[in-house]
Length: 604
View 1 (cartoon, rainbow, N blue to C red):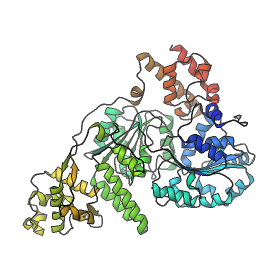
View 2 (spheres, helix red, strand yellow; view 1 turned 135 degrees about the vertical axis):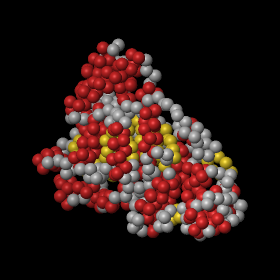
View 3 (tube, rainbow, N blue to C red; view 1 turned 120 degrees about the vertical axis):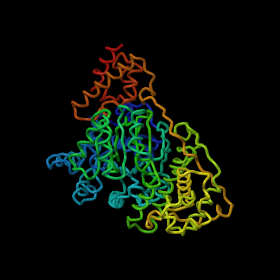
């Protein structure tokens, strides 16, 4: 049990977590919650949101109640806290009744620092009655964007959390999320009755992540090349839109010699849990998944996140890519896309049966996602601007900055496409329009007599691939829209009028030719190892894996890669020196210090 008798937050930060300093805004949030006030915290994935409610729960009288949306991930979070000596438990349907009673008794007796629950359980009469008997230190609502209908992962049961706030108004409430645009923030603040001065936004930039987008051209082979050239042996996540594609891609990677497992809602709960456990407990496993996987994943050494299909919005993209590189070391966010992805996603949005306002919001978000894919400028700048954060561009760590994209004046080309769409009645898709522009004598053109149109054959200056690129970028710029009810027919928008009148210029990006560029693995790039350093690092990793397996916990909850690298760099010669390493708190020093020090001394 941790002794937290009237300590200062700084002391607990060091003694429990092993860190000397807070990250930006963490201390301000902690002090506000300790003062009994409410707040909304927006920090990037891996930015330290959890500490903002965990540390005050250790210092305040009672138990911190943490609302987490996925019960399958609570075990991982609780395991990590127990490694720090924190009295943490979870309460969900995975526990047998005797275990549930044990946790409930510990809660009522005041023997818990933190208790994780799903929103569905929190809202039951039986659990609310249980809380009436307990002393509550705080309420923490993780993934708080689920509260807002403007958010990308709205969950109706989250709306009722405001009722819980009203039942215990004197208990501080901290809502935390990594992804919330301005409308989402306003709704969270309003529903949870958090004052405006309780909003903390530390910034969305993840400078260690490299963003890259490529046009689809046999995406599975493109993925294979990406992994082989840049992430051989690394842990990663691959997102696909459909369950069938998840299964096919996982099988493909397995056949190519990778340790890959599928994860989607169609699998049994046993298989999902087994595959997730392999990803968390082993090294170098690749999970191929639908969006059913990932929320709350704390594995810090995920070196890449790949998307084989376009996400529905930038919030989802940001959250999913944020699961890479949580340890601060180099990581990749890599995506393939095509206009067919956007057409499919628009169909999904329009078939959801949502209200007109919500439908408009989702379409707007999809347009922003498509614009990100097509931008010729710094991708990080586009991404951060979407979340209301200024960035000068030129980040030096996205594909457009590393290999600047050429642009060209496509005003005339845009006018030709728009005229062709208008003269063909706004009833046809991109393939037919390109045939008209190129003057191809197809059966379809003959049948509709489009060879008699003034736009027939006026586009000989570009080839088929280039005209498709023009159309794709016009859709991304909202100058054209795809009618998903009319077999992908392209239609003009009101925004195209100034272009047709010659009052607005249009510039297009030239699709870059793929360049093979091998990149160093993250550990190599983060620490210039000598052969002796590399031997020591692998020995420390092996010890960490053995200790983790003996306890049935993920290796990173023993020590993360950053702490292992610090061991290699500083090579402590005593337990006192070992205790000064970042990430070594009092409990971990007592549990593991001697074992790791022995390995270090053997290699000195």
